[in-house]
Length: 374
Ligand SMILES: NC(=[NH2+])NCCC[C@H](N)C(=O)O
Image (cartoon, rainbow, N blue to C red; front, top):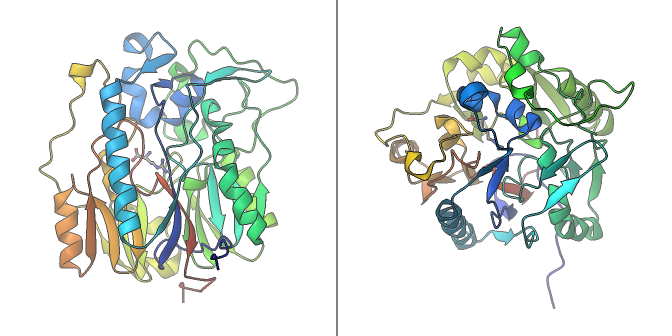
C-alpha cells in the first residue's frame, strides 16, 4: 500500500519536521536590479547605487558561484533527507525567463528563497504578494506541490496579486529614518495605473510562526494592508504586529528555536516582541573569525544579505538545528546549549539573499495550534 500524501500542517518553526520544500538555483545567472529590487534590498545595496551603481539592469552572477551554490543546496537536501525529512523540490525553470506585464518587464528569479512568497499557516497555504517584480511568477514553479497538498485536503489562499506599478511601493520605512531612497528609482521604466496608489505587498518571510501566534513585521502601508488581510482571512490565529523591526524579512533577526528560547540579532529587538516573549531565554549571535567573503575577483560585489544571515537556521526539531558550517562559533554555542547541530556548508548566502530558513518552506511539522505565549 502506498502512503497517502499528507495535508499541509505547519504552525511553528521547531516541532518535528516531516516534509519540506527546498529551493533551487538553476539559471540564477543574474539579479534584475530594477527599482523594485533596489528598494527591497536598499539597506544592503545602497552603497553601490547612484554614480557607482550598475548601469545595466541585469547584474551578472558568475557561473562558478551558482555551481557552488548548487553544491551547497545538494548538501542541505542530503542532510535533511538523512534526518528522515521528506524533501520536495519546486519545478526547474528550464531556462532564464523574461516576464512581461502591461506595466513592466523583468528577468524572472528562480525559486530559490521559497520562504519568501508563501507562508504555511496551519493547514492553509497562503501565497503572499511579492515586492520584487522579478518574483511575481516564482510560485508557479511550486504549484505542483501546492496542488498535491490541495488534493490531500489543505486550504489554499492567495493575497491579491499586486500590479507593482511605479507608484505601488511605499518607502515609509526609510523616510521615517531620514534615508533618501530616490536613487533606487533612477531609470524607473514601469508604468503607473490611474488611481492605483500603494498596494498590498508583503512577503511570507515577514512572519514568524509560534503555534496559534504569528509575529508579523509591518514597516509601511504595503505591509499594513497585508496584515489586515491576514487577520480577516485567517481569524483562528493571533497576528502580532512588530512595528518596523526590519525593512521586510525578519528571519535573520528573530528565530525561535523552541518554546522559551530564541535566537535574536541583538538586545535592541527585545522591546518589539510581544510581552510574553520578552522573558524568553535568548541566544545572541557570537562574534566570528570567518573572513567576510571577497567577491571582488569576480567583478560582482553586491551582498544582498547582512552578516546576520547566518542565524537564519532551520530547525528539524526542538533539539536538532541545521546551521551553516561557515559559522563555527554558532555551531559551538548551540552544541553547548544542548542542541544537536547538523552543519551544512553554505558559502554564498550573502550573494543570493538567503540562509537555510529562506531556502526552505516547512510544509509539514508535527505541532499544532498551541498557545506558547502563556
Ligand atoms: N527569507 C529571506 N530571504 N530572508 C533574508 C533576510 C535577509 C536580511 N534582509 C539581511 O540582510 O540579513
